[in-house]
Length: 303
Image 1 (cartoon, helix red, strand yellow):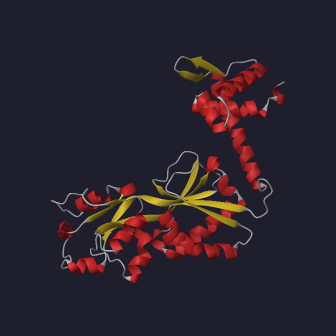
Image 2: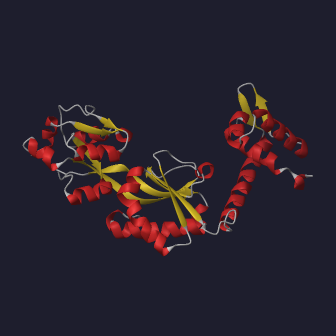
């Protein structure tokens, strides 16, 4: 009896136990809540034991359900890992889907991807540029370059770059206002903000001991690419974020008028679902990426 438990019912149980909600489990599995409820009841009937208590305010796992849930979840994770290790659905091209922010892709990754493709022609790369935090299983993403604190549930993360913060502007803009001699001179310029990092100016001004400047004034852009382009065009001064600006600084389109650089509390990380780091295509990309990071910026490479 137990050996013939229906897989769909086990999947429904795992999702419902994780969310403690038939409605959320139904949404994840593209079913109706009543279908989830029916599958759970079918499983409980086969086991001869209750797995959930239906409370007025929602679901609770019974003691048996609490014991059963991690075992079932582990079994599904092992199945997923085993499938990945033997090549998924048999796609011999080994498609590798990478998620990263547009700024990271444009400033660093895209220029180096031809090296990876030449070294590993058997792996077909697909790049998803987005600022959203992807769900590896739901979104079909193999690896991501994430910016943050490095702690995400169910995710294996490895630090790539730390990031420094410092003002940047076009040399023409600085010259038009007589240049800058001290951080307090920023009061004479428009502040450009990057919406995901709206506290950057407050952090930098406070650390530099600058007072009398409203850290929230000035135009806001939803991406660093747009903000830095605005700075290049002379709209104002932006807070630059480390290596993303290497090319613009090297070419002279932007300059950093002050020596003070602050280390961000966050960093860029290589990330994948727990266990996926052992999949050949993921492991291959990780090894190549760490080597590129070490070659590009040894001082910022993960130890």
